[in-house]
Image 1: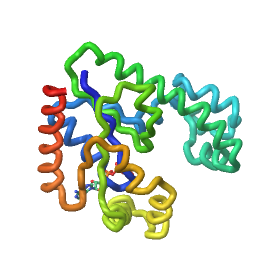
Image 2 (image 1 turned 90 degrees about the vertical axis):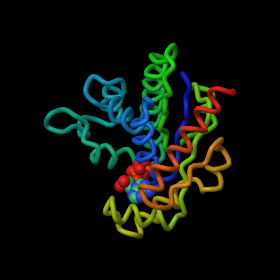
Image 3 (image 1 turned 45 degrees about the vertical axis):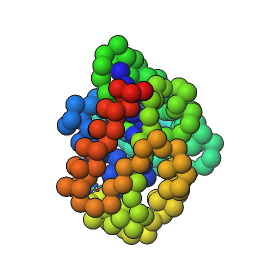
Image 4 (image 1 turned 180 degrees about the horizontal axis):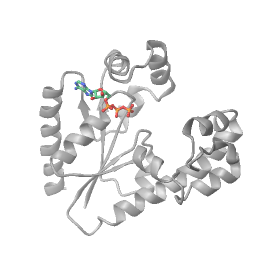
Length: 202
Ligand code: ATP
């Protein structure tokens, strides 16, 4: 197994890069997807969330209503801390287990983690960190065009994140995604070759 930690700001194109890596044969473990999986009924975070925030967060079909959860969980700092204390370890454990299942294979594993921090390099096997980067104006335009964000919301979400400089400082490889999808395909091919190189030469 060889593992890439893939990160980038909102609208940078992480998911697009992850999809192109999967097309080329990588295995994807996506923190956003795992975050959804751990809160389904029977998932490890489901019971603790209902216990902490009450049955008011449940829909009629007993699944967690994400908006209802957000309304109570983001109400104050203690609630946010409780939400994180329940969900973050559950997500981490699930990601580690999914990765462990591939440990003895020669898979290229892509761990897509929006908020990749140095701590992840200690808790998970991450051989190289790849940061997807684009100018803020490009990310804003994508969020408006493809995600129907109002411009002020797009800018507020970007401003709430760590800066491009801080993110890029953690990178072993920076993939610049500021043009179209054709150019992105070429950039992902270059990343693929770099991974091959690092894998074979250490
Ligand atoms: P988030 O953090 O919100 O999940 P992300 O970094 O995963 O964002 P994507 O979902 O990959 O970003 O990209 C945002 C939008 O921009 C998507 O609709 C995607 O298809 C589009 N997009 C990404 N890169 C390009 C590109 N080079 N050309 C055109 N569209 C792109």
